[in-house]
Length: 512
Ligand code: ADP
Image 1 (tube, rainbow, N blue to C red):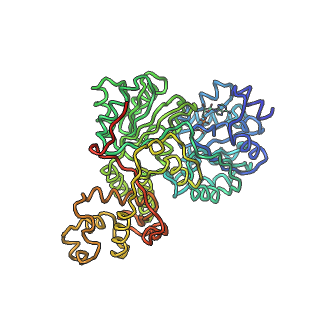
Image 2: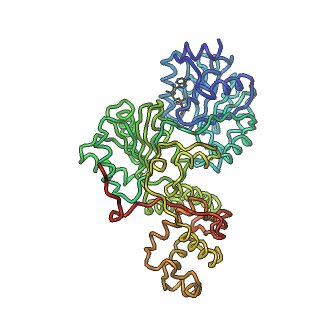
Image 3: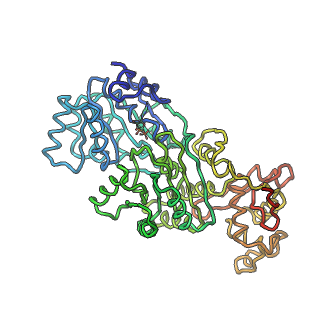
């Protein structure tokens, strides 16, 4: 059987999606391969089809214990013999399943990475494993947003398998650094990347609005649409769920604090369209294959663009137009700061997290095309999407070159050693203790923006950072530095424009 005929007979599809054929061919040619495809891109078929062609067993390593059963059920329904081994099974059941794999009654065996570490290695080593598929492969990299220690030993374990299997690693989110890390750790030299762009997603950033109001209005206006609302804490999930229920929006919820049965029930209510809207923490969604999700709204900003793009990418897996909306306010960035601070990570890894958070907040402040901004972050060039809230922003652009020069010269006079809050205080002419202590009240740039609210100055700084005139380096308290582009502005070689709301009094009368 060829890959093409299996695609048709077993899965019922006529054509491969971008990248699938190339990955499958490489794997069948015994080349260890990393497949980077967006969520919904069709990664599963990249190992499921080879699994039906190679003579032996395919081992699928997946961190999603709760979803393994669903994936295996779906395969079985397509007439593909597959099973899983995880901690929910008894010793005897596990043994039976190993026997089924040994006698090739099953072609695909799903395991969690923890199972590979533990006492099962001897049994695994007896199996005729031809292929090992590592799902969510970014979990192996400490640079990734979802590093899992149990992934670290994978490479060694796989190398010790006597059947010498081919490795295929799959992920939806890998910056160039994470991709390189995955490849190095797993000894992979072939990478197939299909591009991250999701042309059917319209990205939106909503700032400075009453977020509860926005949510209620949006959900009431789209009553039959399926969607996910992400919040950053369990408490917030509970609050939003109650709020929306009071407003007669049909919602269910999911977070790690609910008991297992309730989580499963709520998840199924959502998956089978019994309840259209899911309010959840980021515990919900990895590996969820629901094709008709029309919107993903983040009520709070997540900790990184990797996480954001993965979560937002759960909208529109069927390719139909869908929305990814971020409700942004500065206070929510503080929550993420707090979460990083409280985490068990070491100092270096905390610094990395702060940097990722920084890139995430810049997303909310850029005026570039949002899709393009995300693609650039993942190291890819793109065109303006024409449908995100920035592409559709028809406010007028104003020349803010002079204001920018004021900010940049102040950063410079403060020796590029401080963060945005302090720079804003100096520009606003604040006489506080710290300003005096550093004698910044004697700088020529002191008070250059007197009369302007500090919040508006920090927003301007955020905008200049997001647009690349300033760089904010360092973790928890990023220090502002002037970039090469910023130097051009300072020396009058570059102008800066910013879209700003036209004040009501200045608005032109409408003709129609
Ligand atoms: P992901 O890359 O997120 O793991 P999946 O493998 O779950 O994506 O695939 C997403 C959806 O696309 C699934 O419903 C799958 O059946 C469907 N799909 C995958 N490949 C094809 C194809 N070649 N043609 C049509 N649909 C496909």
